[in-house]
Amino acid sequence: MDRKYLDLLPQPIKLMVAQIEGAIKAHIIVRLRRMGDPAIASIDHLPTLDCYMNMGKMFVTIILSNDSPQAHMLAHEVIHAWRYIVVGEPRLQIVIDAEKATFPHVLENDLAHIFVIPEELKYYPGALQYWDSLYADLIEPIAGVVSVQRRLGRPSTLFRSDLMRHWLILSSIPKSASLTRLRAVLDQANYLEDANALYEEVTEAGLDKGRMIGAALRHLGLSTDNYELARYDVPNRRCTTEPIPTA
Ligand SMILES: [Zn+2]
Image (tube, rainbow, N blue to C red):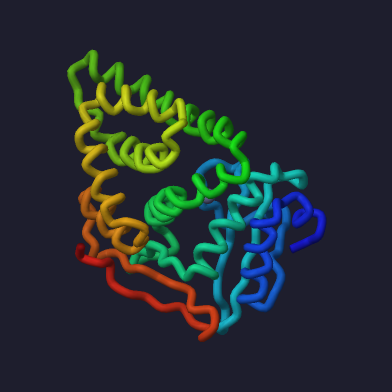
């Protein structure tokens, strides 16, 4: 990783960088966003991690939207990469039409955040405010619609999966003010019980990401047959896939 970015990071995150670079036998590239870059987040101003393997060689790129990233954002992407490459954590992948489907990317990113955000907050407690306001921006527009629909006596089915996903992540950041706000919105939309059940099921899977993915898919009413777990096996220069665990 370029010195000017590496210097922004605290020692434990620098160590993660060294472990990733040792494993892939290459530098982590940090560069500005270009036309045609993949965007995991629907939110353009966030940095994005692009990891892929080509002919057995692993490439890790952190794509920035501007040249002076906040250190916690850079650290956040390093933690994501470290979990995929050094820990060998599986990621959710759709079996058919992998390129077109954004939902698996979104859900994968959410489930990864259950681990990544608390880790980021360990080094940058101030980043709590950042995540809080990001989630406030996501929740408030839905809250407005939910309350109108409630007045009209209509269910808010359209937003169920968004609200549930946000609940999963915010539940892993107990200090977040957005968590309190989201609880009220879920309650108003009549999804609080569902949301609590989802969180319980996912956390019961412990720290096993594959089982967490299975629990989340089942709870969101998605067929596990359409998805699989993918893992980078960097030492053996290959990617492996396995079925979604059934329990
Ligand atoms: Zn992330």
